Image 1 (cartoon, helix red, strand yellow):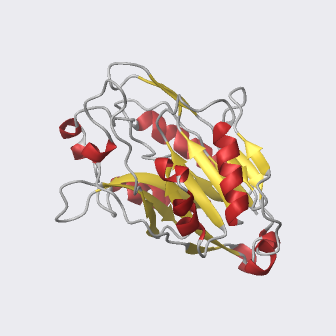
Image 2 (tube, helix red, strand yellow):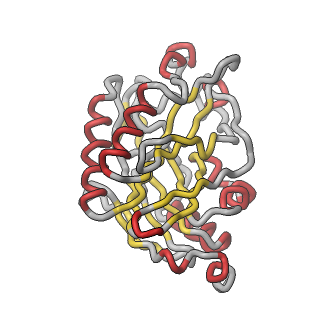
Length: 273
């Protein structure tokens, strides 16, 4: 099967531009034969971790809110499984979750991850992600997705900063064939190529495929420029990069994934790094 990672951005105060990019990317991925598409963290929201959370809390939505319903309808229209990010409000909770949802090809929805580790404020900023969100559970949650021809794939997720921690990968890889990584926010401390090496190393160590989608472009919602790198890629369970985003070729990153290389009997026979 084919797996797509869709970098989108930059985000502004009007989400319509991001929605147009999401819709076009999903249509292109489906036309190219992809069965699964991964979108960035907080897919249609700007990066506002350094802003006063009181100004942004109204953007949180319930699990059956307008963003989830629209993503479910897109998944159903294209016959795709779609992993996307959402600021998830829940009854009785003061702060939302930074969540990753999976829309099945029939349009049904299930949460597969919520960001557990929330970065502190960046230098010079008053607020950090812990002011906007509450931590999600640390355990992984793999969901089986069925595709035509009787093929299925067990998908779990990691949201941005959680990818930095081996124990988070261990939890996400438990029972999964593929880990979807949803990313937004800058990481200026990383040298060029670090993101790709990081994901490939964890995928090989855990013997799972990985698909990462990141925001790209420069946002100005905080009154200063916030640059996103847009690094998006598909990695096999041996750590080999199957497809990667190129700034000169915008659009979905689509990598072929051999399903018969993923069952436990084969994954466990892969050499370790």
